Length: 286
Image (cartoon, rainbow, N blue to C red):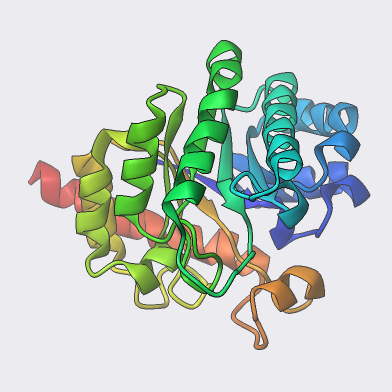
């Protein structure tokens, strides 16, 4: 397993401090950085590329579709804008050498309509992902759709939802992404949900139950790692922590109290999770 950190743990928009942010993540001992893409048209590809070249970090792009680019909207123009948004992100990933584009690729982030999803919305999401999948396949980029808790979205909330969506899209470039914070809310049994996803698992967010330092909350890490081993996942574990001092994301994620700093998440969290992983390996080899 390798460890990574989300760019918004350190800066809201990486365009403000690209070199410093990438350098900080590398200096904290991370193997990868997951970079949020706000507006693809304004994303500073050359500056990020230069920073990554000097860092040795692997890179993943994270997407949260805005409501005006919602791929499940009733408005055809809005859906078309969402598809173009995803295509631009795939092009950015290819330019940066990123292996994955992850996150809310299925629908707009944080957009609520006061009801559950409809079959029509489901079909629109499938159509949008099918429309962009060939570009991802050609670029060698994996698209990972993330189910989120009911407090973050209404369209895709569970591992089973994500499995069904990915299977219906039917592209080798489209996979499932899981996040232990969201799973802590929505899944009855997090390790078993991981096992159900199985080989469809393409990306993983290692986030504590309260978004604090991994290993200090209620996520059953040893059981999670056993499940990841069982499904053959041996890739990135990315932290997604939003400290109170970065008000933009803290406000969006309703983080009102200090749950530890981003440096502590990277240093102490990695130490805690490595210890859990080592325990699993020792048990397996005994």
